[in-house]
Image (cartoon, rainbow, N blue to C red):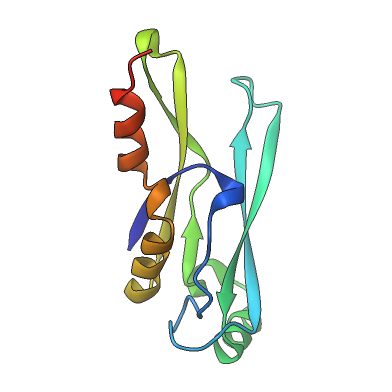
Length: 130
């Protein structure tokens, strides 16, 4: 399940259940790093870290994998992308796409972060007249 959110990194919330099995409380966290370019040259950037919760058995299975760990992860995050809007396309809205293998966890994540859904935020910004 893919969830597209407007990029407000310090305000995202994670449901506190395992993102792989969506049943047990978390015992460990898997970190995924995301890059945000700050200028058009690509010389300045920020690195953001998102922590996804795993239960003890799912976390053990993930840590066992030394090679091809990306395929074993239950969640993935795209780099920060942006779309331009407004008069002469001067304003930009940055967004991130989360991809979850577990549909239940994806639905919970979408419900918890419903205020940051890209379509909702983008339509509100476009409707404002300044």
